[in-house]
Image (cartoon, rainbow over all chains, first blue to last red; front, side, top):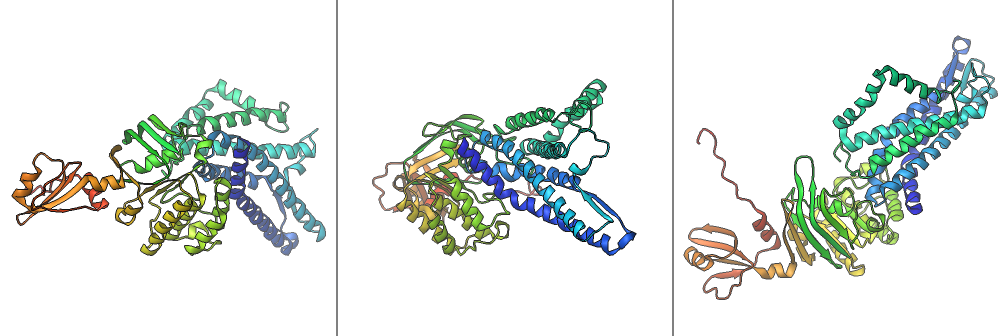
Length: 238
Length: 291
């Protein structure tokens, strides 16, 4: 199994490193263009940026294509579905760490330029510098929280895309109806929102360990979805 | 190496791709897997490679099911006509990744093949022409040296010269590294000499499984005067017949034929035999205005 996990991770790395780096380069370039515009317009323009939203949107989009970019290929190479699921969970963890590191590097780099040229009308921060209204929460708590968000968003996107991959658009959509319908039952919706409060940093219920529940659910559902899955994408029939 | 299908059935939403198929393939040989479009060839090959499970029945390789079973599937390399590789990879990435996944991979041979097919290692898969994409598949299939190597129409878009090179390379590779090679093709005449055994699937069922030599021995093509032919062939297993200007030609299969008299005797090619065995009669189209 260890050998298979290694092979899976190798394939994941080969498919993803360029995409992740491309996103961060494009993102960095965009921020630098905004910085140049802000500086060239002097005091007429101020910019405040926050890098977690774009990277979470990227994570969501990338998570939605990652399954079909990897699952059929590694299975065609003969790897088992269980090894794929285990490797996915490990990859989610590694992905979150890499995203945090790159996110911090971008913030530090922009911060360095701002300091170097003493730019006053440009502000660019990460989630760890967002302390408004949050008490008793340290910088590392916020960094870990950001990592958990990457983990969760990637996992949910993977899960949704794997449902469509396995069952196609129509049946996939039908399968999501009961999940959406739950929110129309007030008592259930209240419980869901109460559960979500454990994941909201700044909320009294928040604890980082609460992320274990959705992540475990994602891992189990992914395994159930893949254990007898064909390599044929039911959306594209390829 | 033994591949055994027992009452194997694969049902898709609206049709049966494989219908109660029982078949055993074993040994180190090149086997031709033939059949019309939709006969179930690709489904059988993909199930061998563990792409999806059977609906019913049993499929084993050395008594172990290939579906989701790495110890079995690591020794299988299936090259299809498309969807073999991720399109964003370069040729060299495909070769490097394949080297990691195929335990018997021969990188020197892969590089030799890449040069032979004139593929640029920095070219991206998505920019390859149809023929070059096929060439990449052939390179991976041959260099994998997998104990079970399966090619499903691997030559789409390849010109006649490269196809001929593929057949030579396939034979050469088999001679240096004997293994079970299954080749599915519609260009039967081009490769028939490579086959040691021939399997013909028809409507998801096994129509024929013979050694190529036996197949040649088991049939006879007779031509001559129509009355003489009809008299001679009465109650015999005729798989094909055609008449013109009082002359008739028939192909008999699996019949003991001794004294053919004045009738002309010859042999059909494998492709002709395949057509005779699988051709379905169509009723001529009659426009509704004439009906």
